[in-house]
Length: 240
Image (cartoon, rainbow, N blue to C red; front, side, top):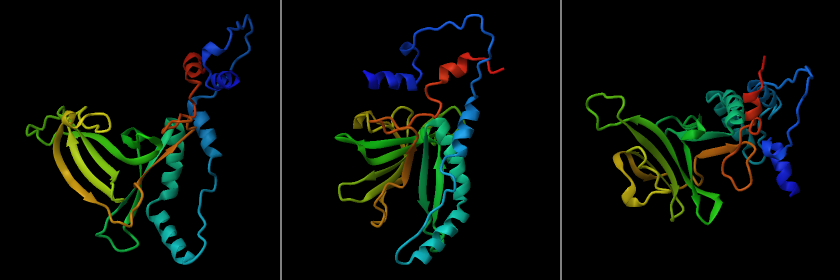
């Protein structure tokens, strides 16, 4: 019971408090805006973000990472991702590589909007991620009239295969017909294949998409916004 009621207090659930009338007091009540809450938290979160390399070939690895940090503007992306992750409750990092570039310049880091990330979880262990779908909405490639209202879901998939490797593919589906995590095979509605299924190099042993949750509830894959629990107050109080 104590666990439950303190959870309710933390999340500001109104049913856990008895109603208190303020009477005739004209003392102002001030609640910081959502922006101020997020900005203040972000200011003191992961200050001095950096890394240290130790062990064999440390100098070479350090040089490579410093060049990567500068080339990919990782510090700037991290500061932006830190704030957006507090606002939304999640942030997503994505690693890609271009093998047509010179060695030492092939890897790139990107941040993604978490709404496009759909993890493929082990049904027997939700803490184990077997892959993910990255989904966005694009123009239907079958349309020849340039009708912008005709759209499809573009699904990019990374998946751990039974042989231990990681596969990669990009397809388009009709809206509502792409999610093979929940739909049966005959319920999927594929439209086109952009990149046929292929295997990543064997040296890559991790899915190159990383979810960073904020205030992650127990048993959940995703996090909570830093302002979760005060939405009603923010909505009800006049900030002026």
